[in-house]
Image (cartoon, rainbow, N blue to C red; front, side):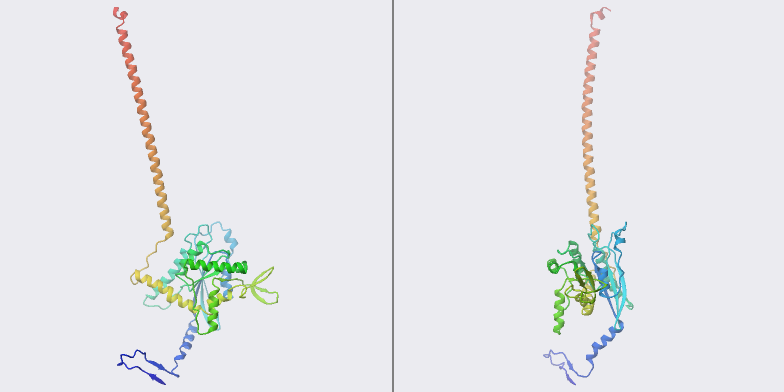
Length: 399
């Protein structure tokens, strides 16, 4: 064993005491950590966000090779006479086990998002849910006893983009802007088998350009690694973003007799786990096999810390979070004010017209009255003249 210690009296020696050892057991710390993680398991929360019918449920079941979420009956929902007009939050929990390692999985779905004619502010329930999870966890940390704390912070948000072949819609841009600053945002092109390879490549490039132009924050995994193979894999993984995926839980047989997960068409089979057909394997590797820990760590050290720091700077310790001003209600209030102002102006205009009409009628009546008075005076004069003439006539004088 070799021990090198810098003297505390030597002010010019900046070196930190180092210990070189071959037998103290420091190298076993990763093994100890592995045992702790294997014993306690892990919590992992994924949010799937996108319009109905883009394959969110199918993708989740395909990703974990089990029926975690039951498929929705879109026909019954389409014929529902009183559909909900708000975005809902649905939570599905499951426990997965592989090689004696358990993961408590939570899937957050957002039914109703983007399904209506007016989708203005439809992202508010999603953003509020993300902030509420950070708030709940922060308040649990402030309690004297933190045993049994519930952690529902979202570690990854998969934003499903409709395969239009053009670019992101205004709703996509506004929603992704607000999600990217709160969660690890991963854009996903749904139903990639509906686009040709050329159209898909152009669609991806358009999405990347919009993301860069609008400064939308998306998740980027660590690329550099000591292993050259891992570095190359990470580079290829990030180059595929936004990930184009195909979801299917059905087994189909290819022309060469292989049994695979995919979708069968008249021209052939679109395979889920074929890198030439879609990016499903790359996305699965990012979420589960290679970067799950980084997603959890990024949520803890960046997104949660940003929220915690912002809240601690604006309020006292233990104080409740001030309710944010809802822009939807503010717009409704401004709309009501504008409508009220217009109504008042219309009533004032009607009142002025009515007043002018009354004044005109009054003037007309005064004019007619004056004319009648003039006629009465003329008649009175004629009557007086007639009376005087009759009195002064010779016949009346003889009588």
